[in-house]
Every structure is written in structure tokens, then in C-alpha cells.
Length: 130
Image (cartoon, rainbow, N blue to C red; front, side, top):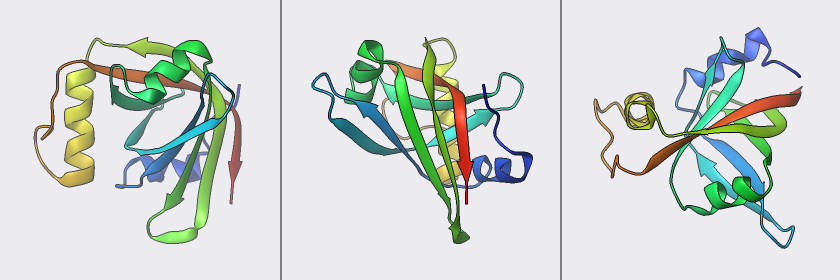
């Protein structure tokens, strides 16, 4: 298992979008921009989504996932992570989307539907930086 380098963890404090790639049932990649954070204690990237969205469906069938991020302040500084979704967590998902809303949009509470949320907990197996 890999970890996120200390000098790249600041990306998870900025409103830096990530692109998440999952695999469709036919093997084609599905890529979508997401809000993301990193739990240093568990060494897991966390993506919040609504249940039933394509990325949620895909990782239930195949947990392999790729994530890439570019520093919004320096487009030549980037992080790529390859790993697996190790857990799908409903507990605390509404609070998690509120925290992401605060970081990405500056609002105290998520402006969309907070019900039916799930957190994809991603174990990093390989990390690349630029």
C-alpha cells in the first residue's frame, strides 16, 4: 500500500477537483470530476456521491479506481492515485458532503440533496506525483 506524500496533502485542503476513473461492466473507463478529501489517519481518499450514480454502481462490480488531481495554483503539479475502493460508507456521508461543500463552495451546508449519500473510501496502492 502507498501513501500520499506529505508535500502533496495540501491539495486536499484546496478546492482542487479530482477526476475519478472507474470501470464500466464492459471494461470501458468512466471518468467523472469529483470533490475529494483525504483521511490521514486511515490513509484513505474519500469521494462522496449519491447512491446509484454510475461510479457507485461501477465500484460495486469492480473496486479498481484511478484518481488524478491538478493543483489549481500550479497546473504542472499533479497527483495520481491507483487503488481500490475498500469500503462504501453511508454513516456520516451527509456530514461529509457538508464538509466538502464548505471547502469547495464556502457554504455551511450542502446545497443539494443530502439524503442517499455514500462515501467511497479508496485505498491507495500506487501514487505518482509531478
